[in-house]
Length: 104
Length: 173
Image (cartoon, rainbow over all chains, first blue to last red; front, side, top):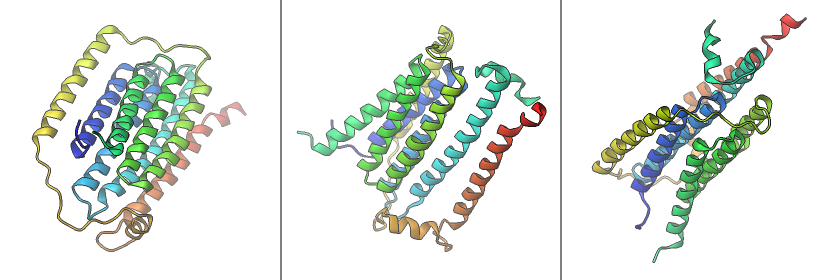
């Protein structure tokens, strides 16, 4: 156990990213897949902040990337959930297989 | 002997990773949402630990207060009470775990082999005043243009949600 630094945060972020990927691969329910996507986006944000803090403390680029990623994630979640609820209304199911005819 | 800051870091890391792992493996969808909530709170704690208080506050307000509440509402709207999620097929679980493990090992190998070099510039504290100054700055280091683009994107998402939600209305009249 040593003093936590950049590598520790990168480890947490990588682990969280692949946890999200695992959830995205194994789940077949659209809402849980959306939750896995949120975990993936959060791991990326953690990376941006860690690089900003430890490697480029004189700039704020990582911080702004994080702010914009959070804003885009909010928009994505809102549109995604609107689509999911609309799908549930027409198919009575939010399984990913019922989204097959979404394109028609 | 570990300092309090180190102990706090490991506690937050354990909270984040444990809740993340539980959220992708539990078979109760509502519990999955609550575990994601605690994983996001753990990440906000890590932002506090790194002294990025503004980002931590944004994380709590937008993710915990906004997105998770939205997800919980959509679970209430689409899920029957007490219904468990279907168990994923064993070979899908196996191959996902294998792919994830290989990707994780590869990433860690790359990360720990790489020597990161820190920039030499004087530190700029991430205070709200500094963030506001560069967010609305139109000079080279400013972020006024992405800020406006994001506001357009949010407007588009707002209109898109209304359009999606209204689509089935005219047929019922």
